[in-house]
Image (tube, rainbow, N blue to C red; front, side, top):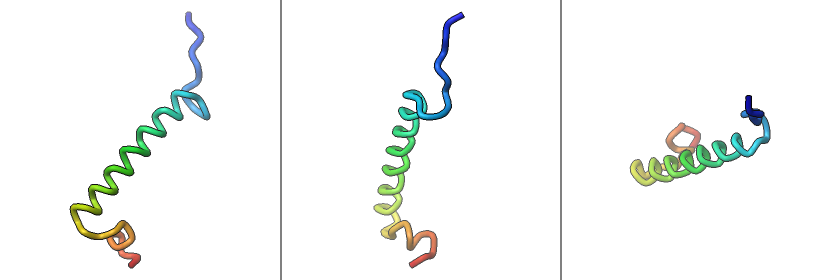
Length: 47
């Protein structure tokens, strides 16, 4: 049986997925602002 690294905590696996999801969220946020013409704070009713 192979030794596998844990998939939780500050591991390379977790940090890779964290970065990918952060980039995806950033692109979705920019696209939403572009398509609606409103910033994120306006969309959620804070401004």
